[in-house]
Length: 570
Image (cartoon, rainbow, N blue to C red; front, side, top):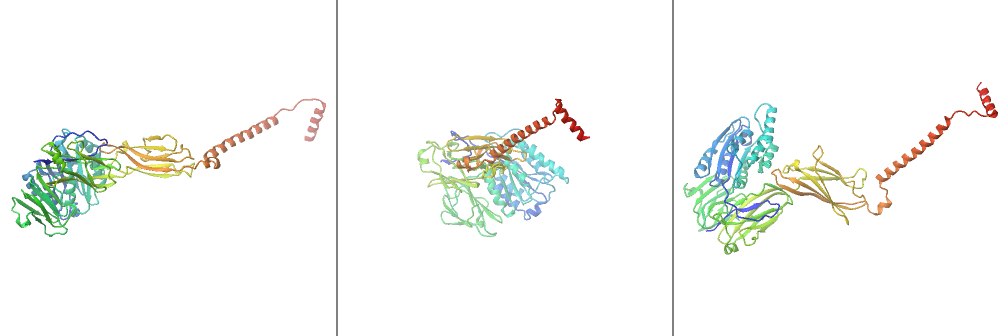
């Protein structure tokens, strides 16, 4: 029987030749649960417990996983081992040990404990390492604020680079509006992870669901109008059904019309666990055909399966820049080998549901197993659901990407010497998804009948901004100006993004002779004043020189004149 493999969604700047990858290793996951006393206020009903139980159920078989609780100390709740039925049972039991009695919040020590066995060497090429950090507060290791600040700096300056060096991705979940948002964001974005924040403990299960299906995805089938299709290859199915209100019944309708409910669970072939906000139903060897979920229609409802017909997913980057293309690609596999059978692929459709673009078909690439297309998503949180389906089976995978509109914002103002020209630019970073130390601004100036001029500005000013006066442009000509950001994401990916393109109107050719250019006129007046004062100074100098000439000793007439003058003085 054919089975479905990873629908590969990768962010690639350039199309690359595709070759089947080796079978991926199971993900390695470490979960850190905050049990500090502040949780008495932010999670008074201990909703971390059902959230952890759900996480334990969501992790696929073979995942290398462990759980720690942390406050002042870091304690192992569930030792690291391969996920199986025994691990899940221990995980369900460990969830009941979650409390809110701890003192302090030593985030650094918790991260070090989770990463300890990974620090000896980087991850293999086909291996992923994930830490999921759940907390409601700040770094708090001492009553001395300076010590807390020093520990926070150590996490950012020393621990985070060490985690990166060992290919460890940190995902952060924040509960409450009192979290150190900047730190959690830095940890997530700086290691290529994801961040989720909720102030409502009632939504923790949904937050955990969405994060864990990115970290360690399960094979799933599409659920539409609360109906879904199970095929012969499915050996186990798990239905996650959320309720609108506590106590609402949840039932399953089988293909033959019979109904399953919680009271029918035998703990063996049918397992049914009801929580305050959801039911989780697991059934071995479910009959094939169309099933119905009798309960509330909810976008977070899921049908997860264990099957030889698998759909794998290569993770999308957690964030990207608007305008950068995502390369969406999918393929089917039989075992570890891609399926190239023309008859099989001829009746199988590949599609991606992109929230901002509707349904997109993925065409087959040159007779290979791969189906691919490029897509540039709009800004915002974009959800992608990929499906591969025929009349006899259907599979789906989900990913989400946070798309930054632009890493920079720009404003314009008038030139000091030309108040009619808005050609003074102020450009500022606005996104933590980019490495500001590697960020540059590139400006392209175009005009009719002239070659485009490109100038790159590497260094911002002391305030971290670029202030650029385009005063060398001809003031009478119209220009089209494009401002672009060029640099790296915090995870090292290169990017180029347009900040803004705008038309800068000049004064017009008619004004070139009619209206004075005040800058040139000022310079001319200054020059004329210098010349005028120079002439005045020269005349003054000559007159002063004549006055200082000594008397001339001449004839009698001149002597008489001199005598008379002396007489007058007497």
